[in-house]
Image (cartoon, rainbow, N blue to C red; front, side, top):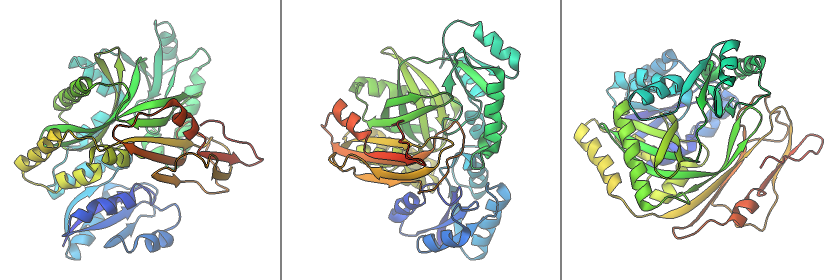
Length: 437
């Protein structure tokens, strides 16, 4: 029996979405390897035993190559043909590349994964290739910050290797070097995210003006196609992070020609960087009418309701596409899959989704639906339970999310966007109401 091994971070990481995506593969089973599940190993296994042929749990919060190789060996000893390993968790991506290479599954190298995650080296490479005009610099010590203040224009700071918008903010006059040191210590103390954020220095980039978008991309055999484009219609700059509150797809202000042009731009970048295989979440801004700038490239699908939204708009499942490509050893057939996506032109729906973030350092009292008169979302989810204390970290903490779907011809109104911000309300200990969303 052929089997895919799914890696999970602490018993989360899109497990139900993976089980739905693999249903079209009639001769394929799923196994899961999780780092120490948040709710406990026994409860995790009881919850997912009917969905996975085999379940493995590590006692560690973070997985490593030894954990994965051991699970693969156990599956092979039980008679399974392990075809590939997949995960949507950022911390697993380089591990996937290593294991997939050993299994003969098509994937980029771990070296490429690490290069793309390094936002400083990625920007420098884009500059050298003539694909970016944004300057960047490292902030290794206090003198670097003082030199930056002498530069003209606006500057945006972020970790060299980052996740969940941790420490991503525009430079202001109040920032001091000890503030960056405090953020670095926060990252090291963040149990769930320290693997990715813990040893990252900060970098600065020239502030990129314009509207912000994300591109969901699948690649195979050296070719790629943009499956869906989301416009980030609400961004919220806080003290030391930037939250992405709401997205709409297709974008509100891009013509068919502009969409075609920016897809060509994405293909040019992927070819230059040799992003030949896999699923990607690319963030970019459009400066003016014809100039695009990369913000970051993630070698895995986007979070929140990105995958569900992309599937509703395009009719193509990102996870299913990734599965199909990683299971196809024939290069010519993988190229044909990508070509088939490019020929699809019909838009199936318009989607809008909103994320409701919790405030760091506070205790959740309750999360409830506030505006019961607004149209019910197609999908909704509450992540946090009563009594949960939010870690004091300058990053995204998802409390809840909701996705609405409309006919393809629907035009999103400002009134609906405004009212949707009241769909969920978050109350904290002592009765304080979250006003972020």
